[in-house]
Image 1 (cartoon, rainbow, N blue to C red):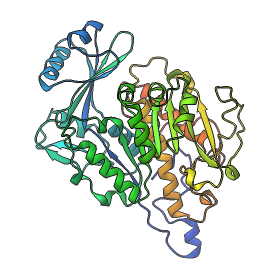
Image 2 (cartoon, rainbow, N blue to C red; image 1 turned 135 degrees about the vertical axis):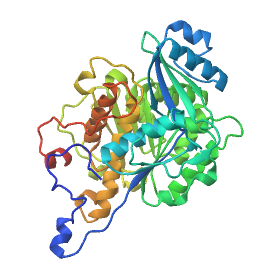
Image 3 (cartoon, rainbow, N blue to C red; image 1 turned 90 degrees about the vertical axis):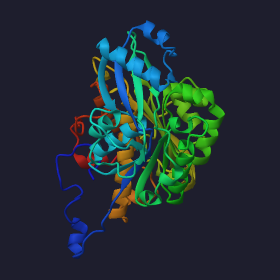
Length: 435
């Protein structure tokens, strides 16, 4: 796999060649395989620019996600197509987006668990999903279903607000027996979303998701939950707090979802409260940039070389050069925070924010996978004297997540369509990644 970020030199950590440390000893290094597993509702995003009155005509709540039946979805699609309002149709799903981006960044495998139409016909939603997904995303474990996968209409009104209309098709038909235990044996993370637990009565998807969580915990694989939208969390905040506290290691959210979960409007305070439930928190906060929060051992904390930042927690970034750990692995756990403003102030023109949070999360997953890979290849490295969750410091993970998110904001599709973003700080690799 690639290590996080783009490097000018290939000698930093050989992947296809023998490791120089083992070469001196006359032996080959251990063969290491790692991947990220995700469970998702397989669906296609249909992005359209619409007038305000269209939402009322179709009974859609502004800024919310509304499930619509198949007949209404067909009617909506035909109107958008006839009026020329569709900007693109692209493979979607928050976890599917994240795995695609991860595989593109890491040049490494990921495994998607979900459903897929069987048979697949050219031009259908299933066909579009497959054709827009990285070849490094393993789709071999998808459960065949007789019917369409989901369609998510992303309706952007003149003010830039996004409203979602979801025709679910068979996307919630994933059964628990379609979750193979073997895929968790070498996994770096399991990624799930809040949408998976919100099906109709009788849908097997929630049970399949809990089965995946159970298998991940059996193999000590971190569970990563992305919160979806604020409306999903606001419906049952106590349920989500209990679920996270019992099952989830890492939470990914935006500032609105953070408020729904914790009651805190300030993103920093929302991260602080969320840390009472999880081990690490990623919060994207629009024009404010993004925050990363976690724990480290008091003896392992590292002070920043950057200016100390004001906020609801004074000088909250003092130890942002630390690497996050699970609380149980810390003799004396302390909370650490990092924050970064939007890269270059953000793109001059943002067509859609759809997928930006997924892109940021994919960068975090890449750094976590690099940590597991390096620990397996060089277990005696000083990088692994403690059980860290990431390869890089929290400050550096913020930089990387911010840069990848920018790539999605600068385009019209919710998934990365280009390779790794360039690094532009002028530091050599050792100085850049040693933080």
